[in-house]
Length: 206
Image (cartoon, rainbow, N blue to C red; front, top):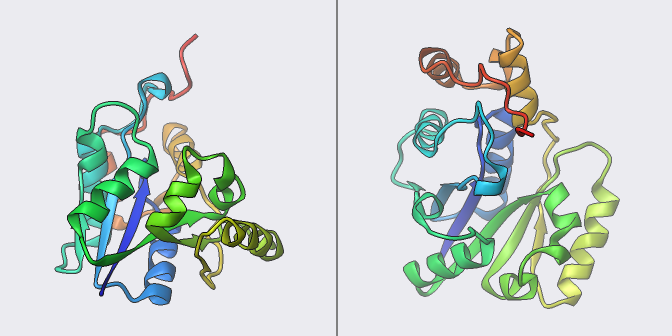
């Protein structure tokens, strides 16, 4: 049975923290194929100064490269309506029949996973692979994993040193003229500069 690793996120922009999470999950799962999926930004969350789906996809390719064991999917970018994780996982269950799905989530997500849309159905479709985003939260993650296991889920906790940076922090640095190169792939740095991304205020209007 093939193992498919699913990694979704806004990736605006993709940074070394994302790479750290991806590589940690890959080391734990040893997947046959990894699927990287930029999320659609919901209409009610659209802000000025954010990158388009095309730009985010291009930056993902620059960061992770082209390989036979990586598939870049625009499924959520193309999908009408809300992009709930349940629908995405159902889609890839249908696409990769007789395969086992592994779904990467951050530590913030596992702690609130019980609030996700139809979370128990998600647990039936995949194994969660949790990668910590902050230091010192292992005990809390183990407690959350134990709860989700009691609800019929399967959870793996990746053993990785957290890379504590967020895309919003990076956007702010760039907008304020700071140097965020240490957090980004060098090709992404050049892409952002060439396309003049993240120079506008991305706060919500009104």
